[in-house]
Length: 229
Image 1: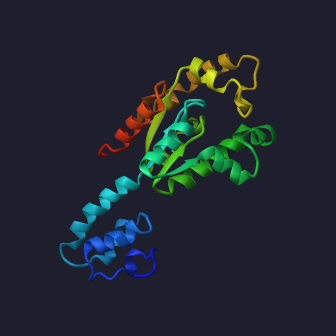
Image 2: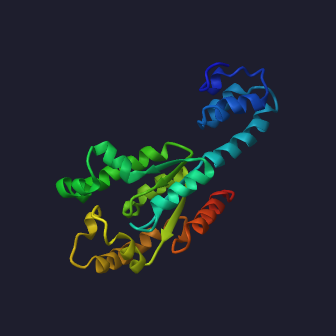
Image 3: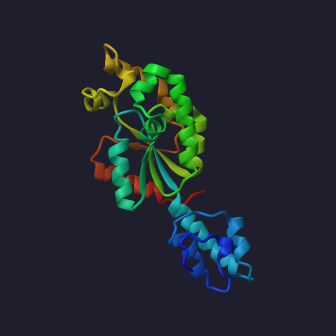
């Protein structure tokens, strides 16, 4: 078995369930569909045994998706969670900038927020199709509930909550926040948080992010490890 990314239909079904399991997931870390795997595990009783292991690895490969307003710590916490769990970190704003070849501020300035939100939704659909990621979303991704639905369809959604005053202290010296380029940024933060509160509330899990990073990371890992309904 020289190819580490052999698909389920290529596996010799004379081998053990464990060998098949490792070939599909231990080597290439890709999640294959139940139907694809079932087609290769044909012996009586073997599918039931494998299915249990498949469900376990699906949960382990499930994304962790961090939501929250700007300055709530999604980047710092996301990177820390990814490092602790040995997962890959993905920042949606970075992916948008890479896709568009320019900065978020420049996209807002030249193409406007509606265009940015359109690209953001495209990136949300794309990243949700991957597995084993810790995803940091943009602060306004929740404004389109379809984004939340798509991201939570393959990931555990966690919203980081921080007060307007703490957010202001964290971001007041940053220059890449186009929505805060106003005379009263703290007032703007308060208004935006109040407007977005019901949108953030729809995320499955809520976490207080005004604590040491290590505590927040532990809570997120605990939430991500809970059995799904």
